[in-house]
Amino acid sequence: MTFLKRIFSRLSIVSIALLAIACTVPPTAEPLPPTAVPTARPIATVTGEPTPLAIETVLPTITQTSEALATSTQVPARETIVIPIAIYILDDADDALSSQRTIADIEAIYERVNEIWEQADIEIEVQIIQRVTVPNELLLGINRRDFFSFFGAVNRGEVNLPSFAPIVGFYSKELGGPNGINPSNSNAFFVMDTPSVYDERVTSHEIGHILGLHHVLDDAGRLLYSGTNGMSLTEEEQAVARYAAEGLLAGVR
Ligand SMILES: [Zn+2]
Image 1 (cartoon, protein in one colour):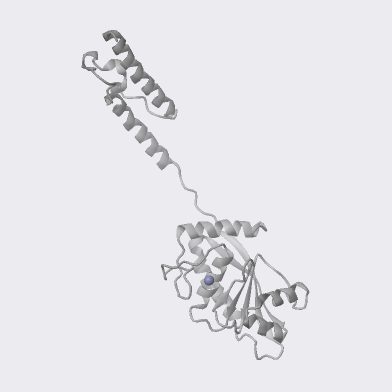
Image 2 (cartoon, rainbow, N blue to C red):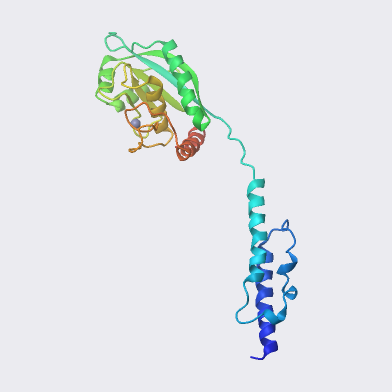
């Protein structure tokens, strides 16, 4: 290869490289610094492989452009997602298995539930709180965690629930062990009268399950850790819950 051809070849490589990089720079990019123009380099110093110097002088321009773009992209504030809930306090016709909670108790719980869910900008909007009398055998079934018999009776109108909502919460005197339960694949949950942790935590935890969150095993400070007063939601959990909430409101689960 002759000397002239080599020079031509090197200039071509540098020019093509610069052209390729220039094409990737958005139109708002600042003009390339003069040192990046190949003709500004003394030909006599060009030896061997195409020098990376010209490329290096271009790279800071690209980096600055990326940073400028990143900082100019404002993250919009999250909108609060409002999820209506219907709440029923379960009473026994014979009274022995009636919940001892009052409507005022429940209202107070939901004020604190919303302090927890505010982390995810999700608001649980109480649509109705009502006492409902349930046949004794169904309450005994709930205590054995037989929720299907209860749901079946609701569907047949044997237990009259005046209205539904995207989430339905039931407050029962007993649950046969756990503080709260979200029967699988349902948008309903049950909470017992005397849980071993804070009431608002139990309710918020069960709502978390309905919003697609699973138990975590390694951090007792988290809302989805089982059996503690942990109340924190990670950013990922917040995103999952918000996505599930949108689906719930759209009738998709
Ligand atoms: Zn759980």
